[in-house]
Length: 195
Image 1 (spheres, rainbow, N blue to C red):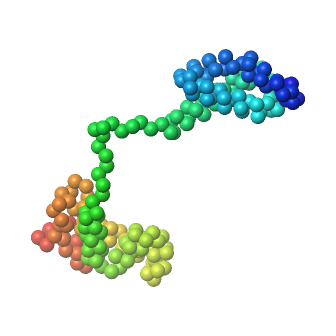
Image 2: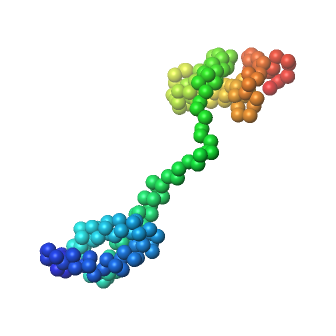
Image 3: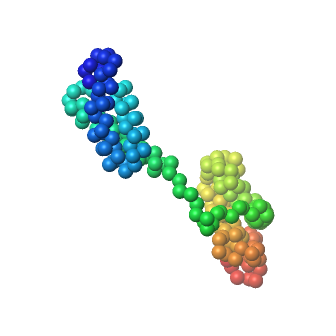
């Protein structure tokens, strides 16, 4: 190793010749695959060649090389974990494409429900929940206190939840919106019961 660091052109070849068999066997046992072990060993020898000047002699050359090979093996294991992809089985269900018509119907239902809210609640919900303004920014834009925006947004969300309850998964989506009336401060069905 000292000869290699000193610049002797064939010194590293001798290191490789002396240690390859044991290091390759170590890499095979670590990785369980001879091709992966060969690649890891090449990477390790390249790293050792480049880092030889940093070898301080505190450990034997063999121990130092084993550490480098072990790190190269770990790198290959990490790469396998992150890049491994198993093919889909033939009977695997693929995700169904989104239904553009159903998406459009949802947008229309949300727009209709928003129109049924009182203007202050609608504005608070749109600014905070749909446009992402903070409560303070919405309060400034509407010229009201922050508490007013919070309460209007909360009441508007509640009303929207009632009006759009039919859109929840498993809520009988094909039945359409419930016959709901929004007036003043209450949400109730036209049949008379409060919701």
